[in-house]
Image (cartoon, rainbow, N blue to C red; front, side, top):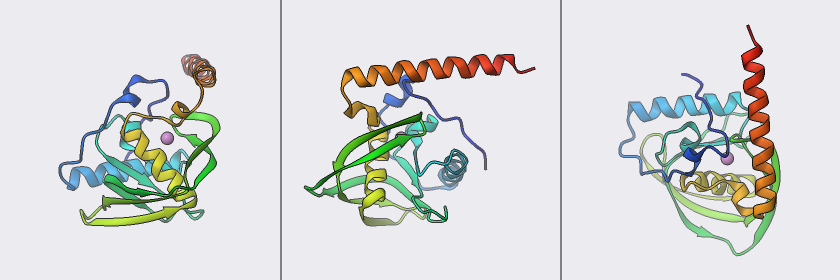
Length: 175
Ligand code: NI
């Protein structure tokens, strides 16, 4: 397994729309392993393939405190979303240290293939529902700050670009 570099907003590749996964095979399972390793290392609860520059409909999630409840969604489809909306503070591995309250349906039902290629339906609420919707947005080229006002989004963009410049300068100073 290997850790993969995570694209950072506003990288234009985060805007790519993912295509369906064609086969649940050894190549895909290796990618799934790498994505979990990358997500756990970064202390995230979800990661879409888009964020590691692979534009296929694949998501890995683990919202458990023990970090032992792996959930893999391949070619996920939204079957139903509840009418009730909830606001939750969201963050994203592609937008380090940015947290904003985003309103979404409180419960969803999705159909997806699992790691074995079996079709399953998942009904989720709470944090898992938030996470599934957030990651499915990534597959459509959408990030959570798209729900904010343009003014707020531009402020976040400026802040992240500045942080990235400082990071790369710090890297250059290293011997
Ligand atoms: Ni994200």
